[in-house]
Length: 469
Image (cartoon, rainbow, N blue to C red; front, side, top):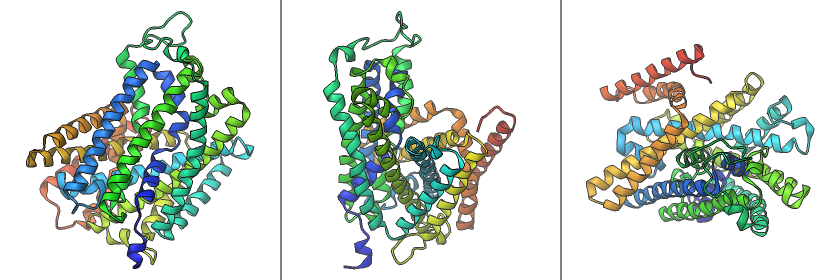
């Protein structure tokens, strides 16, 4: 068997990659966030909307994979087919940015959970936490440099381990669930006597829920990004569909069952991670320790997944001649070392920024969410274009549903995050111009100038204090 063949990833590895990258820190705190935003009935409606939106996106991903097997550069190839080289670069650069920034969240949560066992790491943003986080980042980088298949195998093991506390939580919630509590004030949309919540319409509750529900699914596209490393195209499709079903069930039950175990007010007042507090009140102190351990394992698995995805992104962009060739240069284990090192250096610098400002994490989280949704929107756009050209009504409908859903998600995120995103594209555009010199068309120049103008506006507004970073 050739070395290239041995580095390919199968159905199990791809499925584990998706589930591990999607199940990160959000699932451990989703219960209190959802309870603060919505009643059980409103939360269910919000879940239906999110499930439909991501199901439509998965249909687009799997359908395009089947219809266009020649496009094996992940979701960025679809952006390229829809909007040309610049469109592919914009999608890929944004996804690369969103991916490695997600690792900062994982590092912070790992240290916060570790602080419950070792006081020196309490809070997750002090110097000991930052130093240990840097060590973890470089350890994961070294592991990935040993080869994608070995990293995928470890990721599969981590995924199994981190699902155990989630399974325990589900079993406890099913056992403690009380239907009467769940249906009490099921459609609550006014401030009842003694209620800690202000009056909110059903629409407002659903809107508030979508902010949290949309972003826990980020990572569902992992098999598409890693599609060129799949043993077969059908493996990536199978892994994406299987992971979607698994995530819908896991997220739905974990976030909704607690409404039947504790009151909405109790859930909303829990400190993060909320899952830890729920188990502590239900089964005792050992539940808190189990969740903290699961959180650490979950974040470690997320770190591995979101180290694989960004370096694969830059490799694909370089192979498509959108970034300098050095970004795809691989070692004997077929790992892109330059991209790995650059990404790890940026993560290290970002981690040390916590010593200067506490707002960096919030900025990074917002940017990560908006860029992921923008990447998905390109997929929906190409599905619409392809379906119109080939007269496929089902694909057209799914593309429209998915596109509307993603635009809604970006609108909820806020205009400030979208504006600040333009600043992050300026360094990437410089690399794009260098790699594509002599091949850039007038329309592409106009688009890049527009991005630079937006970046200048964003920086100016930030300096004036109108936009917060």
